[in-house]
Image (cartoon, rainbow, N blue to C red; front, side, top):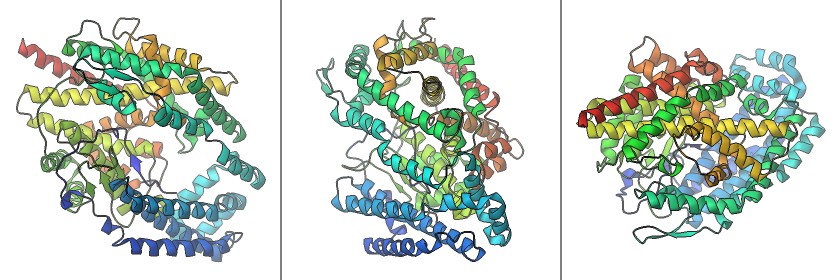
Amino acid sequence: MKKTLSLTLLALMPVFAGAADKEFDRWNLKDLYPTTDAWNQDVTKLDGQIKDFAGCKGKLGQAAHFKRCLDVNADMMKRFARISSYSQQSHDEDTGAAAGMELTQKADVIGTRFEEATSFLRPEILALGKKKVDALLAKDKSLAVYRHPMNEILRAAPHTLNAQGEELIANFGLATNAASSAYGILSNADMPWPTITLADGTKVNLDQSAYTKYRAVKNRDDRKQVFDAFWGKWKAYERTFGVTMYEQLKKDAVYSKVRKYPDTITRALDDNNVPVAVYNTLVEQTNANLATLHRYFKLRAKMLGVSEMRYYDIYPPLVGSDLSFPIEQAKTLTLAAVKPLGEPYVKAMKEGFDNRWMDVYPRPRKRSGAYMNGAAYDVHPFVLMNYNNDYESVSTLAHEWGHAMHSYFANKTQPYVTADYPIFTAEIASTTNEVLLLDHMLKTAKNDEERLLYLGSALEGMRGTFFRQAMFADFERTIHAKVDKGETLTGEALTKIYGDILKRYHGDKEGVVKIDDLYALEWAYIPHFYNRFYVYQYATSIAAGSMFADRILKGEPGAVDKYLNVLKAGGSAHPYELVKAAGVDLASPAPYKAIVDRMNKIMDEIEAIQAKKK
């Protein structure tokens, strides 16, 4: 089913009250449905389609029904994506409003019924087999749009059980989310968060949101207090989080075995036919280039004026700034930055800016963070922001509109059934825009202080999105491999494994960044670990995006077309092959070496600016 939301890793922006909020700065959900009554009418229409679709069961092997049933299923998917988009975005405008909650509940109900009604499709197609499906596809040229989706279903045949086995797995699906659910409740609702008093007398209830905010304060003693209190609380629940994590790992191992995969990483990457070599090369290249990460930490220590870098020193901004970037300026800057991608790209983005595709400012009860929703195929992408006039907001704007243009071009180019794309390529579009923005900002900066702001922001982005996510990937690979082999893991053991990796990446032994053992509880804080082998894609994407952007900015022949072809392809081919065909092989060391080189060049420039000040 088409993804409703394409969330970004940068989705934890704080909400600031009091920003301007005119109608023009709100997205226009009437583009989806003019009224709630119109939405309800579409729900009723989908409900009727679901009832009628029962007539397709057992008939897919008949040429007279094959195309009709596939077309109706695609139309239902498209309709549900639009219905779900309207309900979710209505709720996100005001998360406390009863009307929005009611819409999302209705959408959830119809969505469940839709999934139940279409659950026979995959087993029935698998039962037909490749020879029969190929014959049916060959009878009608209009069925060519279903070739890739059908091949994806058939590709899973060796890992699909008989009807009875699949039904059993489906039934167990209702009882296998206990680990992630328990983690979510404990870490977000039930944890008794500590209260601390900062140096200025401010009392802080140190929940997850407060930790994200106060770990970056200027006062170093306050930062240490924040880390000690926050991770001390997690330490108290080390055993409990160890149980939830181990249960998750065991579940993944069991499903891998039942699905006849050699291990969990192979099963996870096979969802999008990504070679395990991509994952392994990422981890290997990251470890081979830790000297660059260590160089960054030494530079950070120097810029912060600390003699011994500690783990609680990695979050304060490298460069403070009072510069303000109003939303109209941010739009202008972003449009100028993406100009190398060509007039059609700029024109499409400007169309979105001018026609209320974006909800810009924070409001009370509005959903926090930032995301792009490109699921409404026949309409246009929608972008949610919580814009607060700083440079990070400008960077987030460019990031989210990279996603939006990906959906825009995929939806314009592909039929609905192959328009959706996986995370593996999604984050390439956003990170490419960030690189283009940085290039533009550096070219137009008025002075060295401005340049330092942009360079420092980019540098921290690479640290957090490339090295940190690769570190997470390293940890995930290690712990899944142990459980796949039948080993047990406790919370204490997980902390030891994570702590060793954390210290290696940060150069603890070399005296680059000293890591207190208490802070190794960080593994328990990361929710992504309950979604197997997910975060590596952020690191591969920033590597690929950096390489694409570099070639585009150098004016290499064909670079723009190759990049745009990746966006336009949507989900019409396997993502690794799409990116490789465009000239970036993520199973080779080249993309990872390129982003390391870029990081070193940025540090060269920062050091040159600092040298001029002396």
